[in-house]
Amino acid sequence: MRRRLLAVAVAAVAAAVLTGCSDIHPGQAVVIDNGDYEASISKVDDLTGALCVASPILAQSQGQQGQQSESIEARQYVVGLLIQSYLTPLAAKQAGADSPSPQDLTVTPEDYTNITDQMDDAQADDFLQLLQIGTEVSAWQSQIGLTQPNSSPSTAAQDGQKYVLNYAKNFDIDIDPRFGMNGNDLGSGKLQRSGSISVAQSSQATQRENPDKKAAVLESLPKSQICG
Image (cartoon, rainbow, N blue to C red; front, side, top):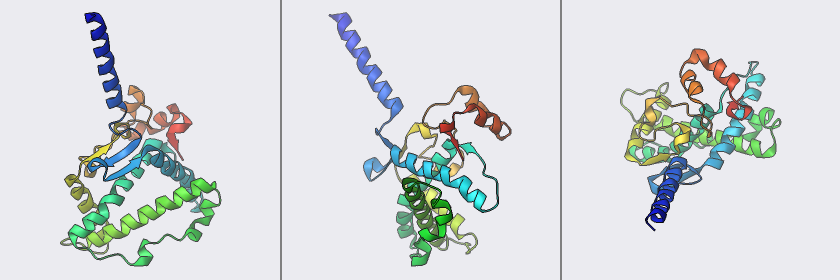
């Protein structure tokens, strides 16, 4: 009987550990203040996928050669942008920022047909959604920046983002650990390279910290973990 109870206890602990390692909030990439804002892993996947398809097309349209990167970098960009999309309007209210002009908040799909025409419909919609989110975040952060001492139109966007990332410390931001981001220190600029949802090998994790070895890391990764 004692051995049976011990086995049950071990199984319960193992289940709890596995759940904790996988996700505090199953299926969610980001949860802010226990559910006031949520972004699912599937949404991050869709937006990241669209970004990775669009990036080389955009580069080619500008006469440049598309550059490959680890998809985790694109994922981290998308996660960071989604977090800022929630926090920026709240920060703007706190800072007393003026509303951006309507044209600064609008993305015109026709301006991007040279890219979206080369994508399937779902990817094109996700790409335009990502552009819309980025446009709104940028416009609001520029307005926030203008409220800051010694800011100017040329530095407003940067000043506004700094304000928002500092404002983020007032929130409980949970990010799935597989994205390699710290919700308590979004402004540090130091993002871990944990791998694209699947965990990378330790040798790759070490190499990816060295920019000179980036090519070696990319060559070792499956296509599913490469963007561009």
